[in-house]
Image 1 (cartoon, rainbow, N blue to C red):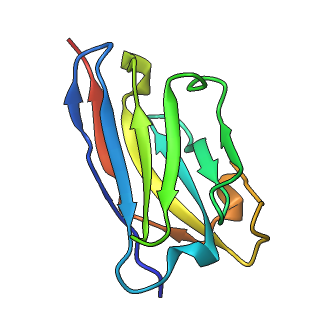
Image 2 (cartoon, rainbow, N blue to C red; image 1 turned 120 degrees about the vertical axis):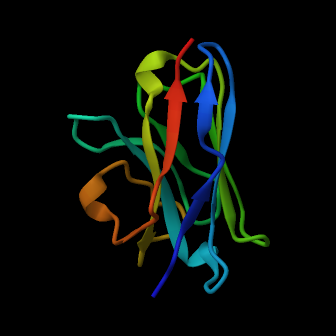
Image 3 (cartoon, rainbow, N blue to C red; image 1 turned 60 degrees about the horizontal axis):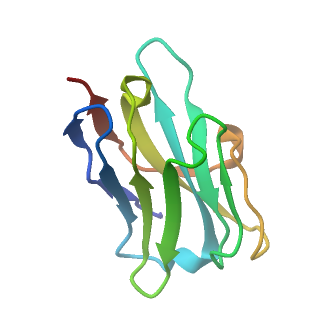
Length: 127
């Protein structure tokens, strides 16, 4: 069973930055496309960004384009989400998720596509 562990969340002021990491120690991540999702209180979980198995293709929600950057290091089994220019509306629990059985270039921001999920890390943007 693939286990994903998120880290890097915290409290930051508007305009600040955070770097989230998603890691696994038991399996090789390059078998999986990886997505970052978030869920704010009272709202549905939404796709934030995703990256293909080989790291060539990425996709972003319109709300984070130009501010967030996703990357992966398959040798280290980690995927990183660099979040800059954070806004209060970015406050949410952030989850990484893995999608197995897709081509090297496939990406998806659909929550229903992903079969493996981490426990989440809280991001709070507030002054």
